[in-house]
Structure formats: structure tokens, C-alpha cells
Image (cartoon, rainbow over all chains, first blue to last red):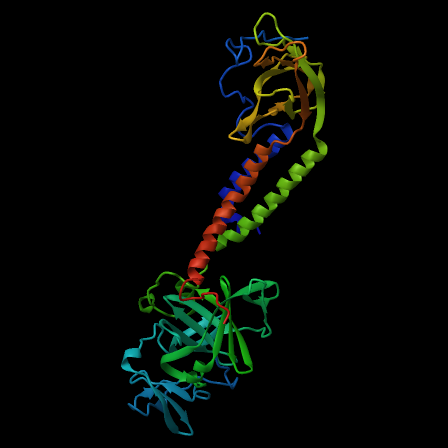
Length: 62
Length: 442
């Protein structure tokens, strides 16, 4: 039974690693590729000259 | 393909003389054979009751040296066979399709085993134990022969002409020219149906590599015809890995579905915050609004959070919504920035719209805890009394990360899909070319 998978053992290993990563990403709510920064202009919220207006004070903790 | 008449046949010594050139004919199946092909002069004759009757004279042009010498012994499925007859055939309606058949005989067996060679590729053909294969016409108009659930696609229907023969036969091989032969394929298996009047016989055929043939009989590769492309009968090289690959992919797909089902069951999508906000003009900066701090909300993580901004009042303008998701306890910040832009108008009497009044951002892997959002809206026009710029913010936890899903699905199916494509292309190039199976339903 196991012997039949001998020819594709490296493919199986790669896929299992990828699948393990997918399982981890699914249960931890993480992205597999890329990041959450969708601001392609490279500005950050507290950087000067942000967006169309001026800068903002950043940490407005309650 | 003939049935051997007597189960008690024995291999005999030479004894038949060609009526044309007087050459002795080797006869390896004397009790049954009564048709002979002379290797010396190409005469095919019947020999019964010590009388010879010439049936056909094969011309010198059609003469062919068999790749396997007559009399060659073979061990096929632990039974001893002897090559007793050789025939060279061509498709009746196409002079370019020529193949060679080697009839092996085994004492005690009812049927010959035929090794057929075409374009340097070999098939072993034997009578099928089952003789009641069902042939049905599919909705696509093609015929299929069914062996249980396995469908063999109709591939070719033909009649043959005998162009040369050597050795001894217990049937008049010239009668084979009246046979209607139909071939059905489920690569690498083939079913052959020979029909003569009301009589129908089924045979199985399978590709045999030269190496496998060498394991069965003492033959030399030097005499084998060279292979030519396209190969007809040899199974594709993907077969050894194809089935395990399918099984593994199937298992992975089941696990893939299970993981997603599990995740959606135990970590259901849930809205944790939703509220409407008005932009208030910030007098310290033209065009900007005052920063908005949302009430705290609880996130059960680790979870992906979707933040959706909707503003129905953005009209031919824009609203930038930089936001920071901040953990109330440790101050960890996750930044997102979205711009709602919505423009519409009429050009040359044609209405158009551009942009969207709805934008979503995704923050992945947010740990459990209490969070709030700091939003720093900026609008194109300064909000005034009576011209408030309002927007809604909704935060949803355990939202579906489509990118992960499609990426993993792509990883799972890409390689099998490529292999399937290669296999499909390979099989098609073998079987469905001009000469071998135009898929007509004759």
C-alpha cells in the first residue's frame, strides 16, 4: 500500500508541509502569503503628509 | 482469431512439403494444422488428406522476415507456448497501416495467444474469459464497451487483408479478411471484438514492452522493428505515479474540506462591532475631520478581522479612512487604510459610475483581547452642518480568508492537473491521430 506512493514521495512531502502550513494559517487566522498592509503608497497613519491632508497624532488610547 | 480444435495437440516434427517449391514446412502443431505458409516461396496452401491446394501466392514484394523466428518457445503466464504461425496484415482501406501477428500455441489451450507488432510496439492479444461485453451508445454519440464499470471507448473499426504468412495454421487465415474487427480502448487496456456474421468473439489486448517480451521468450532486440512515433499501445510513463497521485490528491481534498468545515464550525464568522460615525470638522486642519475613537469590542482569537467601511454620502468625492486597531491592554497596533471614492455622471448621454461606497480591510492573526479602533477620516470637502460626512464601520471576526483557500486549492490541484493534461495529450496523440481512430462510429 505504502509502496505505491514511493514514486511521488517528494511531492507528498512538499504538499504535506504546505498543507500543514495551511492548517496552521486557518486555525490561527493568518494569511499564508502577503501582509495586511494594503496601503500601497507606503504612508503610515502617523507619517507626515499622509493622504490628502496633514498628519495625525497616533496613539489615542482611551 | 481461431480456436484450436483439439485439446490434446502435440508438437510434431517437420513433414509437410510446399506444393510450389517443394520446401519442407516446419509444423509445430501437426495434429491440427492444415493451412501452411511457405517461407521459401510465399505460397499459402491447404493440406488435407495428403492433398495440397494452393490458396494464394504472396508476392516477393510482400515478403517479410518475421522479427521472431517460427518455433520460438515462450513462457507466458507459466505456460509453454510455441510460435507456430506468422501473418502480416494491412488495413483493408488503408495501405499504410500494416502490422504483424505472431500466433503462439500451447498444448492444452483452447486459443492462441497473438503477439501483434505495429510501428515497433507490441501487444499481447488473448481471448477474454468474459464474452458478453455490453456495447452502448453514449449521449455524445460514441460507442463504449463496458467491462463492469470500466468503459472502453470505441476507437477503430476495420477489415484486414493478409499480405503474407508463414508457418502452420489450423484455420484458413484468409477467412480473417471477412472479419469485422472493432477495437475499444481504456488505455492501457484494449478490447477487440471480432464479428463474423452472427458470431462475436472478444479478446483482450495489452501493451508488452520489448523487455517484457524478452522475459517471456528467447528473442533478440536486433530483429525487432524500430519504434516509430506516435507510439500506439504503450502506456504513458505517468501511469506508475498517476493512480497514487490521484489517491493522495483525493485524500488531501477530503482533509482540505474537513479543515474548512471544522474551522467554520468551531470558529464561526461573527460581527463584533458595528457603528455609524459622523465626521466632524477639525478646525486645526482644513478639510480634515476629528479623529474618531470607537468603543472597545472583544475579539476571540487568534482570528482574522474584517473591517468594513460604508459611506452612502460620498458622492462625486472621496473619503480616506486610515484606521488603527489597537489592543486595549498592550497597545499593539494594526494599521489599515481605505479610501471610499464614488463618482458618477453622464458622458454623451451615457451614465457612468466609478469607485465604490464600500471598502473592506483584513487584519489577520489578531490575538484574543479587547480592542478599539482609532479612525482618522479625511474628506474631500470640509464637513459642515447640514453636510455631514457619515460612515459605518463594521468589524467581523473569523472572516473567510479567500486568498488562503484558493492558494491551497491551487497547490493541491495544480500538479495533478498538469499530469492529467500531459497524460490526456499523450493518450490522444497516440490513439486519436489520423490513422488510428478517427472516432467515427461505423
